[in-house]
Amino acid sequence: MKLTYEDKVKIAKDYKKLGSYLTSKKWQISRRYVVTLANKYKNNCLNKHSKNNKYTLEFKLKIITAYVQGEGSFESLANKFGVNSKSIIEYWYNI
Image (cartoon, rainbow, N blue to C red):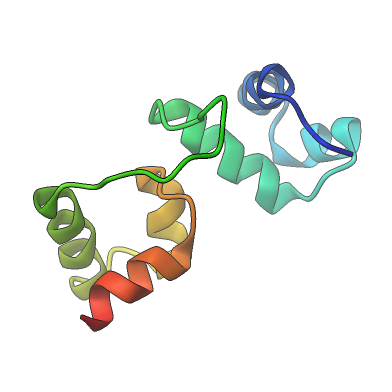
């Protein structure tokens, strides 16, 4: 099932009211994906269209610093900061 932008917003709002378990059952998607969408919505990073984002050096350093200080995994930081993929952060870390 392909979710529209509007569906993703509804899921994020349902998460706030119902939590991840009930929202995942209602929409028939994983709890992990529910939380990812909710975090992106909360951080104003839920995009209508997938696109190549350009991130500032300051933003990249903020995320890498958070990773080095043990504030989360690549995946959790991607969700927290609205980065499309954990592999992007892994790349920044390795260069």
